[in-house]
Amino acid sequence: MGFAADFVVWQEHYSVGVKAIDEQHKQALRVINSIYKSMGTGASARLEADLKRLRIFTATHFRYEEELLRIVEYPGLPAHMEQHRTMRERTESYISAFQRGDGDSLELLQLLKDWWINHINGEDRKYVPQVMGLEL
Image (cartoon, rainbow, N blue to C red; front, side, top):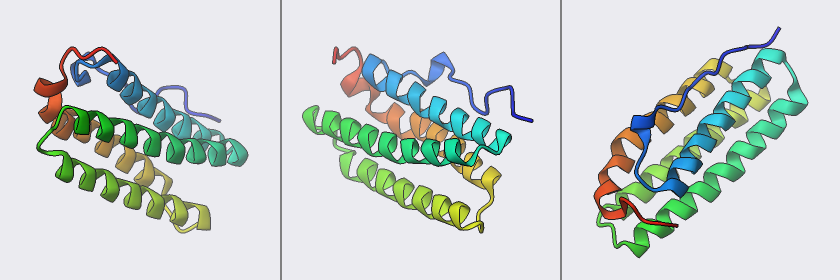
């Protein structure tokens, strides 16, 4: 039996005003939902693929966002990059534990959901004035 509903849903107030970044943030939530649904079906091959997709997506998004913030000379970039680094490490730790059979799948999902939503609504919101309306 799988999970029918999404684990996390995009809300318009999450928007940072840059279409490319908003689309990437929506994609992050889609990846989390795919992981959630894979866990619900017990499809281990699909789950492994989703976890790999999460790793690749996260690295790509963080690089893109950090480069954008470099271009606009965002003064909070060092702290923002540190948050990204910490999240990559936490995610890797949870994924590794989960793959070894030591991890809690709901903990991983909750970490992903909470971090992405809090990061978008907190840290990403701080750079909005410098990037609002950019066409990328």
